Image 1 (cartoon, protein in one colour):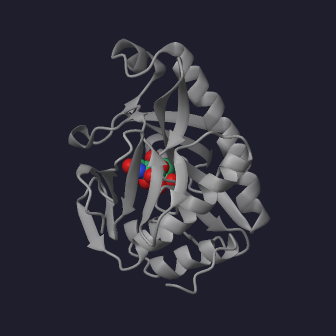
Image 2: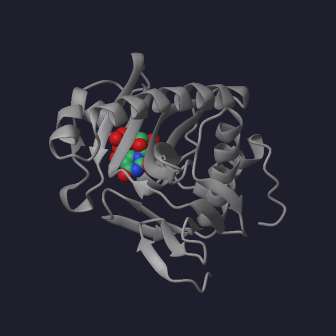
Length: 243
Ligand code: UDP
């Protein structure tokens, strides 16, 4: 574990300072939580797998010209990332109805949405990450209209690239959550993809069997979470010989 100063501790990750004021270390824990921490378990190796999978996906998105915070993986559980000012919004992209969305609108799980839908939730555990609109974001100044437009465009582009990537390995990208942050490059502020993209933050279904290869295995007590994450990693071409 890093000996650097801890700056932030979330449910599944920690952030540490480095000697470089523009860079941080992101550490992936084995904690699995759901329903705003009402369900909590430690699942051995989950952090290692998410570190590898998120590295793979951020590198892939980088190669598709999606700017993001990933610099390099340091070891099993840590990656070096660019320091950003996190915009406190969870951006959820949905292709197929699942999870809380099905309950909210009474839609059957698995129904393809007529168009890709973007939703925003405030990052606020105390209030159960409430669903918010563009208007809330502007009124409370979490981001301005130009930034909201940029976030939506980036989220759709990320969805297109990820849908193609997962499609190529016989996985259906049902929905996912992403976060963005602001960086200063020279005089211009840029919005880049931050946080992680892993089976903790995506719904991934095997195209042939419809089997869930994501954190719903934990949320719904289906078992086999590590096997499912390993399956995703293997299909992405990640070498798991060290695990
Ligand atoms: N998600 C996430 N973190 C959260 C809430 C949701 O990564 O705090 C992801 C979740 O894994 C799914 C997508 O965002 O891929 C949509 O989740 P939903 O709103 O349906 O909530 P859930 O049913 O997961 O509580």
